[in-house]
Length: 503
Image (tube, rainbow, N blue to C red; front, side, top):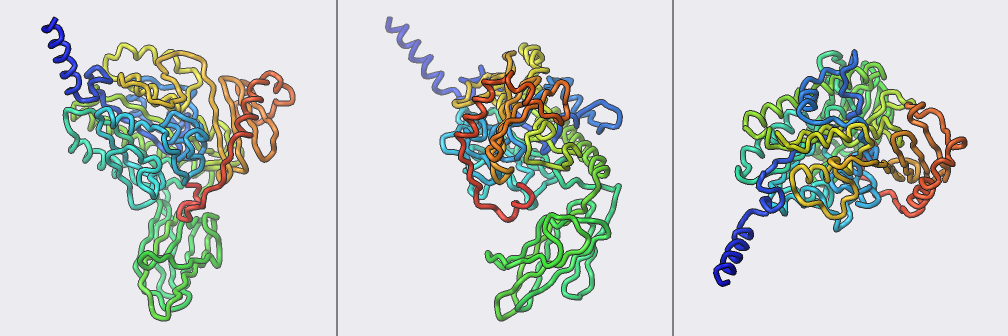
């Protein structure tokens, strides 16, 4: 009896001494890599004639599973990513607008894994993804977070930061990494195909020539005399001034567009900066300039940007293989939301709940020889959601489910419905949508009117069939009515740096 008691005590002590990760995934030490490609449409990865060349993405698909009907819960970056990391809807996790903070008590994937022995890392290529207050948004729970000096980072910089993390990672502990690539987010760069220029002139001085076919982050230190200093910016083609600011130390100086408007395309702009002091003032000037290509040129550039991301994926996979950890890493690639390329007369990200803004790729590569991989294939044609990603990752890594998760593992083949939403500030009032494989029903707080699309016969969502077929979804009508009536989503105080761009 005593011997049995001692043996039980020894076994319990052995379990306590093990790293937490062994208790949750059977000692496999599965690494987890989540790759988020900004504004990547589902149809961006295609074998169709004229589509972008993506051999590395297709190779990743060959090692895993590609889901055909995955949808985001929001057309806005931060609410969508919060749903991805929490497996909850925006009105549940509280980050309903870009710039909001997450509700306290909402569990996020990096927190859950960190408590179970994982090393956690994130490289946010979109500057606004990491909030101003550390630990109150999408960065919560990451042991290490890397951000970059400009709004959009190059994929090579994101990969370099991940390489540095892997170099310093403890070899006997698993890790979770999240990489955010921004090449496919508007504005799209021209690369070598279309070199266009603009000039910047300060109060009649010699003009400075800048290239605007790619994002031009213009930064200068200048001494401004008392009063108003004017900058004239002229483009050979239509261009946008996405940002223009001036500060002296921590003090922001007053900037006025006297000709032209921020974000709006034009060829001639006059911007004044006010020095309120009686003496000259040294200040830091910063601008973000980009040309405004046509729809046809934007489509071409978008394909070019997809290929740039594919090159980055190739380098990423090559690095994991060289380190001998590719087969021990569960990899997920997806997007926060899609974007329009002419659909519904729109270009770029949007505030509506049409499929061009919600339909995203989802690629999942499990561990090598995982016997459950064929189970994933059973759901490839089903409606799946970003909220299903975390439960699936945890299931494939044999980590216990995360509390509060509203999604479900894709290892279970079952019928799913999408709930998507957007709110005041991102759109005109709150709008919710319910979608299955055939129908989409929408209700907005501003109009208090239902609209409905039959997605089998009307894939472009042009004809509202609610007057004829709305009676087929009475339960959906009740659910949407409750959602719209129960959500209060006041517009947060704008962050002027990103407000006009919808960040």
